Amino acid sequence: MTARIAIAGVGELPQGRSEAPNTMVLHEQLVMHALEDARIELAQVDALLTVAPRSDPYLIHAAALAEHLSIAPAIAWTLEAGGAAPAAMVACAQGLIASGAAQTVLVVAADMPLGGVSRNAYVATLGEAGPVHPDLERPYGPSVPAMFATVARAHMDLHGTTAEQLAAVAIQNRRGAALHPNAHYRDPIDLAAYQASRMIADPLRLLDCAPVSDGGGAFAVIAADRVGSRGIEVLGSGFATTHLHLSAAASLTTFGAASALERALAQAQLERSDIDVALVYDCFTIALLVNLEDLGFARPGEAGPAFAEGRFGPDGSLPVNPHGGLLSHGHPARAGGMGQLIEAVVQLRDEAGERQVGGARTALVHGMGGVFATHGVLVLGRS
Amino acid sequence: MKHPSPNPAGTSAAHWRAAAEGRLALPCCASCQRFHWPVRARCPHCTGSVGWRDASGRGRIATFSVVHRAVNAELAEDAPYVVAFVDLDEGVRVFGNIVEVTSAVLCAGLRVRCRFEATLDGGGCVPAFVPEAE
Image 1 (spheres, rainbow over the protein chains, first blue to last red):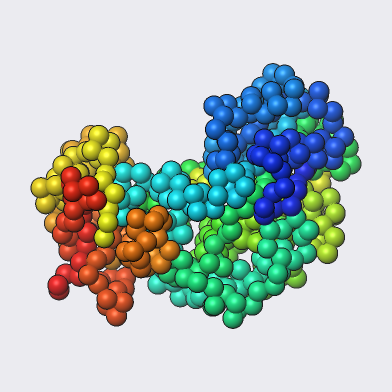
Image 2 (image 1 turned 90 degrees about the horizontal axis):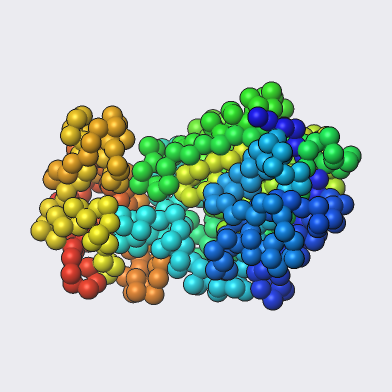
């Protein structure tokens, strides 16, 4: 059963160190922003979907949020899919609306690793309870950057990808973030700054890694025929899961994003060439290159040179992550990927100001959980 | 290197028991006889049932990273240390540390062999790889 659905409104606050006193209040603030943007009353929400934040201990986080908001939606569910969660929650909303279980679905994901946990504690738990295998990888001390670094090294050895090409990814993202008022890091960087940033897990430097940010976002989903002129329609969605731990991946240089995209495009009855702007998961510079290749926007090994030549820049043939990506707009822990979805909506509404991709009518949103493990793709378009 | 003790009751218990005896035991399919890693409920190649078999511990580095920022305080004094995927001669890829290696020789394709290192609490061993020539 399918239903035509649309994103009626979005809410975002500055990423970085949140001024909210705790994660629950940050969720509340994001909810109110999204509902105001969508012109929906809180009492209309009959389904609330969240991701469990790392910085809060609730058993069913969505039910705790509903309680905090003093609402009693029919559905209050918490979903886990890593950075693919925003796309997964859209698909869940579509199913709820199609079945008649809900009419107004509010999706919110936020986390406060800086304010709520502390940066070092968060990085340490990522190494133990993140995408690292607790039995078979953890005893050898890999950090999450180290897992992505093994992919970067393999990509360099196989394709000749260079550190300068990784730097081009970091620099372009920072240039985009400088134009986004909510971005975590907005100061410009150049190749010298990249090369001077400390080595975290060779070949990845600090500026190859997304920061640890407080933040997140919220959005409302309703049937497409109920949405106003600012609504953005979900034209297609697709998913793929190939493994959880990198040790179990079939390859160390190519992963499962392609089939997620193909399913989404088939549903939307569109081609890759119809995409005007792409929001692609970039928790590390190498992740963006590999994902762009797997999504078919560059041939294997060609994403690095293409990035360095500006093909994915604001004036290139396919602008990618004009908001600065996870790398500079911010990576709010469990809420990673909300920024990408919200930027797609803002771009399609023609409300991105200085970052606006001219004539953007169709956007791709790609989210990824684990080390290239699980992928979610949305194709969005103007209603 | 300081290794936290592996979980002796997890799905890989047979692997860790063997490691304590100096053997590199890996899951191997009873039907197609192919190794896989990490351990699964069913063989990922043919869905056959999974047994355990000792591997030679010899192979080549597939890819690696030199970790400069240790993942926790315990490992900080070991940094920089090397994590790697090793393609064993039996045709299976495993994850672990490369030890006693200089940056001059460390590269993908380097032949390595397995030996064993004690865990932090002294109650077990984990495999570690050294250059084969050592």
